[in-house]
Amino acid sequence: MTIEKKIAGESLELMLSERIDGLGANELEVAVLAAIKQGYKEIYVNLAQATFLCSAGIRVLLQYHRQMKSKGLKLLVSRPSPEVASALEMTGFPELVEK
Amino acid sequence: MNERLELTLANQRSAVAQLQDQLEVFARQHGLAARVLHDLQLALEEHLTNILSYGYDDKLEHQIRIHLRLAAPELRVEVEDDGHPFNPLDRPAPDLSKPIEERPIGGLGIYMMRKALDGMEYRRADGKNFLVMIKRL
Image (cartoon, rainbow over all chains, first blue to last red):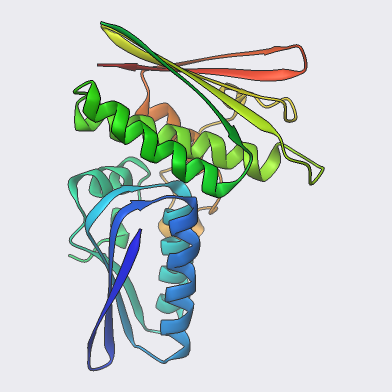
């Protein structure tokens, strides 16, 4: 998995590619924690190039989605690939996806 | 079509990543549909993560064996490990009807395995777990 970062004002986009496996979930968590520490108000996790998303990855997304939301901030998945969109729908977490 | 692949990996994250790479090569060589590869990789990732996280009390290296058999109309993958007895078929399904804020964060992996696969068979023998994952081609 690789992570690219794109900054637009107070918003950060993390672009993940390939497999978001157990290792990838750890890397994602490190990147999200760094972004929260840096004070971004909106974090978008772009999964257009992700080939799969395991439950550990969903847990990271859900945990920080909740944490950001409780502070009036945002963490959302943007542009999920078909595989990722189906994993999120299958587990009943479509709320994680940017509308 | 009757192809086999046998692999042994250590109980380490990096070994799981290598296995996933090898599956991608196998899928390309045998023209497997992207959906079949995706679902199999997802199920294996979830099962191996559980084995690595909860299978062992000691810090020793353990071997996990993977026997993959491709014989139309299905792909069967057996995972053999010497960790604690663990039958994923016994686990209850998570409650997906609750609102997102009230949902417990754990328990998703086995549910995703069930959804990704067409069947699973489990047996415990000789102090080992054997889980067969069945995926229709």
